[in-house]
Length: 455
Ligand code: 4AD
Ligand code: MG
Image (cartoon, rainbow, N blue to C red; front, side, top):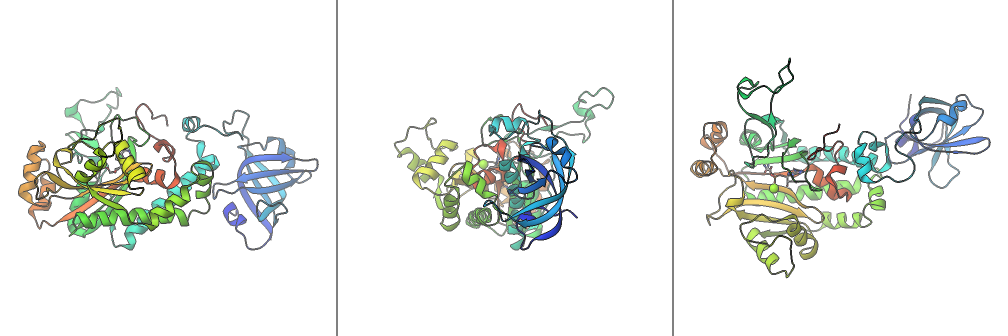
């Protein structure tokens, strides 16, 4: 039976007979022995294997180069060297698969750009191995956060006929003609209507919140926005809670609680994986995360944010004007230089926000909220929803949404309407925040961005 390297490195006692498998990271040779460092992906650490040149399989040592796969049998013994507690004295080794000289990952460091071009191999590096283990654990923590609070996990559809954000940034779903391989014309389309990949599960999520009370979605979402930035991907994962009997304040509270919970998770429970980000990406990472987990966030209205920005004396690339969206440079200035902590901005002008947000009594603003964090900017966007049927219908008319197509959505307001609120958190942006990685392409296994879908 194979034992994971994670368990071997964390062993409490020596063992006479273990089996381990892994990919060779390095090999050093001396006269009578070779030292293999192998990694099986279970943890950041490598297992040191001492191979006596006489043991079965050692004839293949010259092919056990970086990237080759091996299986090792032997004794787990206390390590003589200082780097680790345990090492393996092999009694036999087996070369499973060679990695010829063109194996692209060699010992020298590689640039993130190069590694993106070999996204299928980059999880074999220490940094990206750690990245994707953290991504896995953080996904699980998202579920734990909601399950502990009695939220129900709802699978909202990926193919949809509605446009939640009304920004026209949807990927159209079409079928291919099986014989010609050409796109079929619209009338012959599978669903007999225009359908798209979802930009958000919110609208469908609302219908479930208005039945099960508290729900969340966590799945892939798609945006055809042609913004080639380090924070936008065409396919990203979003977490969207939705709560009945909840207002804007409750919504902001939950977003703050969730960010803190996930940051605390990143600090605590990553099997040492976070350390590589501290070492190579951001020396101040732990300190920054500890501060976020332990201190209250700032909350200000959009109107106040605009005023603070205008009085900042800072020359922004885009001037700050009431009625315009905050740009990422504004968001970053607020969080990094002014408040020096995460900031939730609420009550945005209605003209720049989607139809479903609840209109405030001032008739100018809606109950939108964006949670901004240092280094990234917006990580969460949400709102209290317009639960009043007449106001919602007026909004929909203004946004030229057909009451017929969205009849199912309007039903939530026709039958037992209830104040409710929710938000969406970009999972990749959260991962960037907790690891210090600067580019969204480096926190998702296979990034889809304008011009890039190689895999
Ligand atoms: O602010 P957004 O567009 O809000 C919504 O979609 C709402 N329907 C959510 C809701 O209320 N249920 O997106 C929410 C979050 C953003 O704050 C950002 O973190 C992330 O999703 N996001 C993206 N992440 C990566 N790439 C993109 N292109 C993103 N667009 C949004
Ligand atoms: Mg937003």
